[in-house]
Image 1 (cartoon, helix red, strand yellow):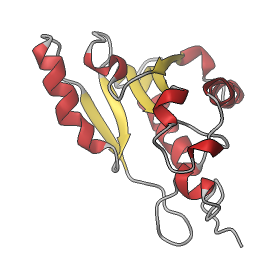
Image 2 (tube, helix red, strand yellow):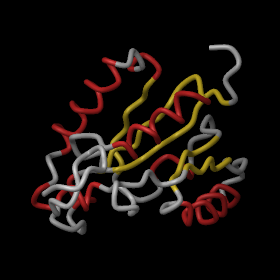
Image 3 (cartoon, helix red, strand yellow):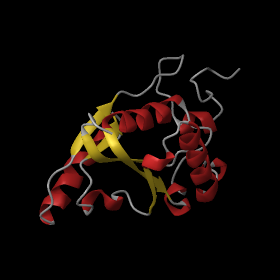
Image 4 (cartoon, one colour):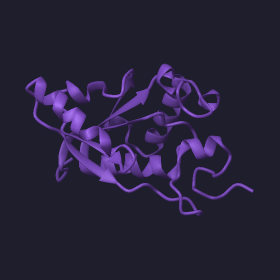
Length: 159
């Protein structure tokens, strides 16, 4: 694991199956720059406010899907999966966490996280921002758009 920029970074999300190209890009970037990756997977309670939340699989199904994906990529042994019960999770208290990988649509959290860390005398986190992956129509790929039936996980428009 030499030549990795970080020892531990975090990513978080609902990660509804099937994982879409944006999820894959986010997760891949995390493993590219860090020895170990903490994946914060939102609880069922946290998904209740999402559009078409009735189409979101349970936490256990989503967790199994992530584990299967990481196992196929031979990355599971470098992964910590945690249950995310609030928007911050361990980002505001974990001393070993060095960075969070975010997409341009979730970058707004960085100042709040580092302010809360400072209040607890913890060092600030780095935020590594990746661009949103675009669908064929030029709009971002998202699980919401997939649940709406607009696109598939690769960003192709559904007919």
